[in-house]
Image 1 (cartoon, one colour):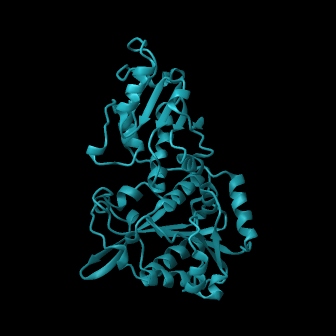
Image 2 (cartoon, rainbow, N blue to C red):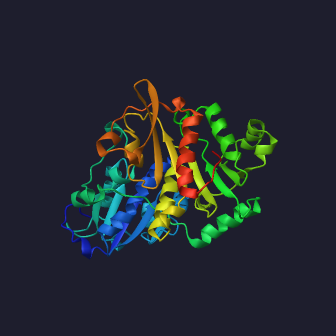
Length: 379
C-alpha cells in the first residue's frame, strides 16, 4: 500500500471508499455523499464501490444513494472480508486514519513499496468536521482532486419514475384527490432554536389549510404522538386535511417529497429540506421544466461558529428559496439568499428564528406561489 505514487486519473479503473464513522445528521450526509458524483467525474473511467462499517449507516445509504448511477455497489463488510488488492485506489473517511493504515501494514507485510492500491484521505470531504483534537488525519490528501471538488456542487438524489408513481399511489390511497395540491411541512429539527415559534407555525399552517383544494403532509418518522397533537392543535375540520407519513423508510419518505402532487415544501434548515433540494435538482437535470418544481422554502436563523452561515448550507441549492431575516433601520426585513449579491450572502447577522412572524412568511408564499402556480392561494 502506498500514499505518494503518481496517479494517472484516466487509468484508475476501480475505487473503494471506506466510510468508517456513524452517519448522524441527514442534511450533512446528503450534502457530503453527493460528492461521490463529482469523484466519478474526476476519475471518469473508474467503478466506485462504497463500504460502510457501521450497520446503522445502511439506512442513510438506502435513502440517499439508491439508484445512484455513480456507485457500483454498497457493502457493509468488515475489513477482513474485503480484498483491497482488487482496487486501484482506496479513499478513507475516518477520524482516526492511523488505525486503518496500521491495519493494512499488518495485513500485507510483504508488499513491495509502490505495490497495491493507493491510499488517500477522504475524511475532510466526507465527514462532519470535528475539533482538531478529536481527529487524527495522517494520510495524504489528493490536492488536485480537492481543488476539483471545491467548486460549486449541487446535490442529487435519484428518485425513479417508478418510485414517483409509488408516492402518488400512496398519497391517493390516503385521500389525496387528483385535483388537490400537496403541501409538505417539515415541523421538526435537530435543535429547537432552528424552529419558528409555535403560534407562528399555527397561523401559517391554518392559512395553508384554508385552500380548499389541498392537503398537508406531516412526517412522523419517530412515532411520537403527532396525530393527537395536531387534532387538538388544529381542530377536527383542518385535521381531516392532514396526511401523516408513518411506518415508512427514509427512502419512502423521500419519494413522497418528489411526488407529482407536491406543490410546496416548507421547513427549517434541516435534513429533509436538503433532500428535497437534491431530488428536484435531479428532476431538473433529467428534463423537468423549472416551472414544474414546487416552491421549496427553508427559513434560517443564527448559525453556530462551526456552521458558518446560510450561504454555506444553501448557496449551492438553486431551487430553494432560503430565507434570512434581518433588522434594518429598526424594521424586520425578509431576504432570500439567491436574491443577494455574492458579498451580501456571507454577511452573518441574521435574527433568530424566534423573530419570524406569520405575516411575513405568508406574504412570501403568496407572492412566490402565485408566480409559480397561478392563482394557488387566496389573497
